[in-house]
Amino acid sequence: MINSLVTACATIQLEILSKLIWAARQLFKPKAL
Image (tube, rainbow, N blue to C red; front, side, top):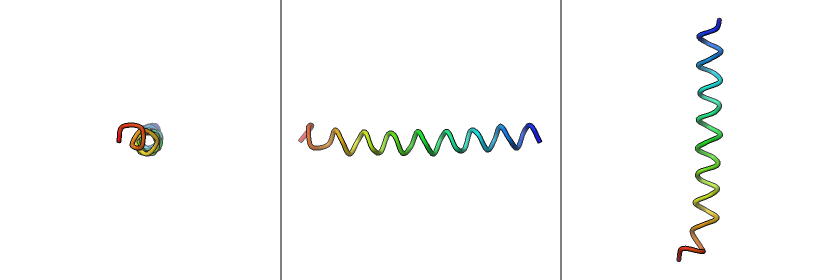
């Protein structure tokens, strides 16, 4: 149970991080160009 919960939390955190990074790239693209 504990291992599965930790894995699920890590997966969710990775998804949130990837979404935040993608959003940041979308925001900074016009400024960079």
